[in-house]
Amino acid sequence: MSTARLLDGLVVIDMAQFLSGPSAALRLGDLGARVIKIERPGGGDICRTLYLSDTEIGGASTLFHAINRGKESIALDYKDERDRAALLGLAARADVVIQNFRPGVAARLGVGPADLRAVNPRLVVGSISGYGGEGPWVDLPGQDLLAQALSGVMWLNGSASDGPVPVGLSVGDMLAGHLLAEGILAALVRRGISGEGATVETSLLEALIDFQFEVLTTHLNDGGRLPRRTAAHGAHAYLAAPYGVYRTADGWLALAMTPLDRLAPLLGCELGGDPFADRDALNAMIAARLETGSTGDWMARLRAHDIWCAPVNDWPALLSEEAFRRLDMVQQAGALATTRAPVRIDGERPGASAGAPAIDQHGETIRREFDL
Image (cartoon, rainbow, N blue to C red; front, side, top):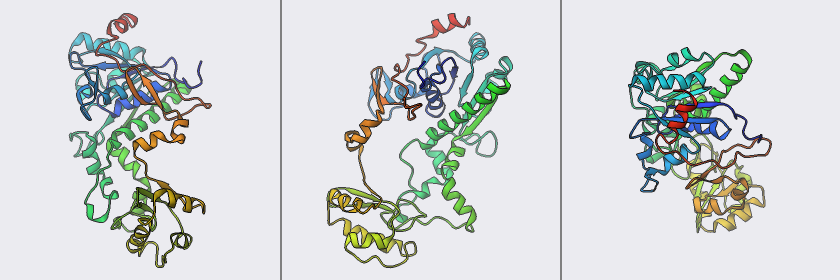
């Protein structure tokens, strides 16, 4: 058995839609688990028609294909008594079930964690919501941009004059998926010791709060002061000059933590003052100097003196880098070119997987195999 297929033999039922829950199931599938995706008869996962652009493959969005590669599909209607019984039959023989219903919905349909664990006490049920299982936000849509807005994270991005700036990725969804997979794996370890299943829960809001733990901890312990973003060129509300991103004559350059007395002679300018109190003025001086030379010239000069810096790549630049190619992070999954699992185990990365399934593509086989 390949060492990268650590979860071979485990059966994961993916009842989730969109991003967060299916991404957790994807992580388990990459590690070798068999993932059976439950879809609505007819329309399937709503993510099939959730387009990031006009790019599609086989009538479904590239997003759907990317996050559901390697899974099997069976169509079940939870409101139909026979289909609900089939789901419970699957749960009785599965190891993990993943859900991302709004709180209370799965229980009303008779497919909540308690219903599933009643037929299989060893089952690990993982659940992602928008904002937790109770409280005044419980019924709000669990959507990434809205969760970012409520979490405070938008005030950490951009410059002081920008207003709130969202992270340009579905960061809450993806982080929640990673956290759920982490909790599920911990529950499986406990089950291996005690035989006891578990219900693992997280939310987009919890994921985004945890994402901010570094700076939120500072806020909680410095009298409640708010972070102050730089006027320009900044990359972290709490870090002093020169930390930030600067334009050069032909591109952009990122500068990390660097003592100003080391940087000043390399830039050929005076950088006096307090790195934090005078941050805006210092950043402006650094920016004016860096604009006079190319990114390559500055990189050669600064790296020769062990200054922490990097060119700011776009995707074509990243894809052309030898460092990227050596990571072997791209695979062909069916008709889709996409990324691979971001972990290596004993030096081996999980191999290429099949593409995403058609709706109910494996329904007949699954019903026969599990006697549903």
